[in-house]
Image 1 (cartoon, one colour):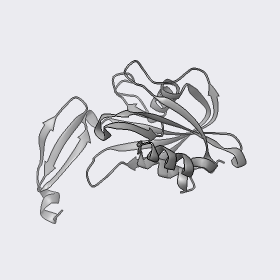
Image 2 (cartoon, one colour; image 1 turned 60 degrees about the horizontal axis):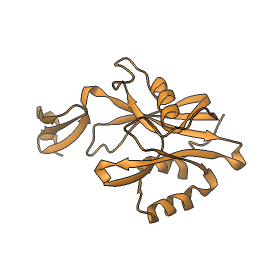
Image 3 (spheres, helix red, strand yellow; image 1 turned 45 degrees about the horizontal axis):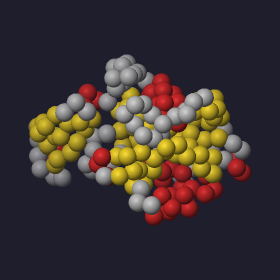
Amino acid sequence: MTVADWDAPEEIAWAGKWVTARKRGRWEYVTRARNIRAAVILALDGPADAREVILIDQYRVPVGGRSLELPAGLIGDDAGGAGEQALSAARRELEEETGYRAREWTDLGEFWSSPGMLGESFSLIRAYGLEQVGPGGGDENEDIVVHRVPVAQIGPVVAEARARGLAIDVRILALLGAGMLDLP
């Protein structure tokens, strides 16, 4: 991208219900429609020496198969309404997708999915102290499989999922370091 691209007017190449393809100078990128963001949940439970994390896998059209992911959902989509906050969306999505509720919630900040191509951000929300209150699995349009994984086994679990052909969501890197698992 050149400095001339920074000052170029933004053009909308295509707009759908959920995404918009944009162009600025020579740069093409995609954003969520209506400034919708996502809430991604790092759901943890147990003492430090036996901590577990909730992962999900589900079919994702863009990768043409199932993907191993942290639970997540859109903030302010049809279910949540335009004024929904990240924490409210995280609570709703954790229960809907996984069947769990959490005792403690911490907003770890806003992150950008792939800033060279996407204008999409998400709030990473840590949930701790889990209680299973339902089966999970998502809504009637989803086929979500819930996994409760020992954090100490995350590397082998990711390797096994990859060997079975699952796509691995980049946000799983949060489990492989970065200090995000430390609890107050």
